[in-house]
Image 1 (cartoon, rainbow, N blue to C red):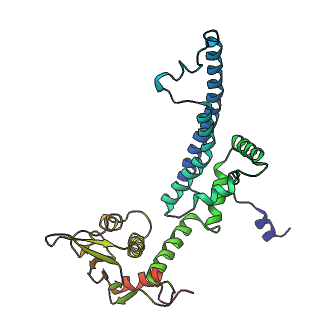
Image 2: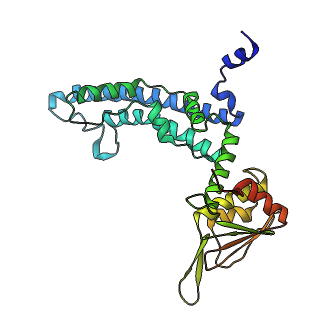
Length: 301
C-alpha cells in the first residue's frame, strides 16, 4: 500500500473537524437528549404503574382510575403524551444542532433534509392495506432510535459538500452577494462601481406616511450585500462594528445617509427614492476589492 492509498484509507471523524467549543455544545446536547429519552421511558413505566394502582384501589367503588391522578386538570399526563414527547426528541435534537451551526457559522443548513436521512419515514397513505403494520413498525423504529451527534455532523458536512464549516460559510456568503449583485439571468450587473462608491439598483424603498413623515426599507438583496460588506470590513463574522450590524438587523433609519461609525473600509450609505443606494468606501481600492471578491466583475457562469 503506497502513501497516497494509506492517506485515502484514513477516515476523518466528523467531530474531529469541529472546534472544541462546537464539540462541547454537541456533547452537552447529546447528554441531555440521552437522559431525556431514558427519563421519559422511565416516566412512562411509572405512569402505567400509577394508573394500575389507582385502578386496583378504586375497583370496588367502580370509580375512574384517573379521579385522583389528573383531578381538576392540574396535571396533564398520559401514556400517549409521554410517548409522543419521547419520540419527538429525535427531531428536536437535530434542530438544536443545526440551529447552532447555522448561527455560529452563518450557514443555511436544512434540518429537514437531515431528518429525512436519519429518521424513520412515517407511513404516508392511511388507506393502504398494510397501513396498521407500517404504523406499528414506524412507532417501533422511533422508540428504538438513538441518534448520535456525529451522525448529524456527517449529514451537515454533506450539505457543505465536504468543505470545512468556516470555508462553507464564506462561500455561501459570497454566493448570496453574487446572486444579489446580478439579475436573474446572470447577464446584467445590478451594481455600478464609480471610484469609491458602489451603486446598487433597486436596493431600497421609501414609504410616505403623514405630515411629511416617511420611512426607508432596505431590500433583501441589499441586506445580503451589506452582510458581505460587514464580513469584508471585519475580516470575518465576528467583531462587526455596531453601525453596520444595526443597518443589517434593523434596516435604515428615517433619515439618509447612514454613517458607518467605527469602520475603516466602508464609510456610509445613502438611499434614494428611485430605489438606488450608494455605498461609499473610504478608498477606491476598498471598493474595487470588495466588488471583485464578493460581487464578481464578470457575469457568473
